[in-house]
Length: 97
Image (cartoon, rainbow, N blue to C red; front, side, top):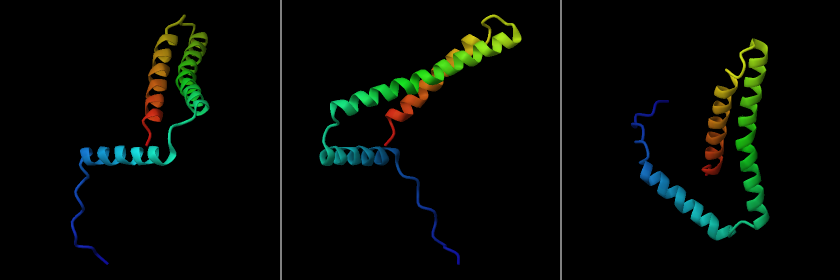
């Protein structure tokens, strides 16, 4: 069974963002503002989302440096990589629909 209709055109990004903003506003009108406790929990989770990859990169770099005997050669790049990864994950989490 074949469908001869052409594929629908991709949705315009402006229309998609407008619809997303409207949906967020409608949800806010239904549910209201978050409580102070929920906001504090969100800030705490955001901190952990940012810190864990940064520390993971640092510890992995230190481990590599200890194994290879390279001083802090790998620590700095993996620290920066973890920092970037943590920032990207935190940004994605904060901007999730």
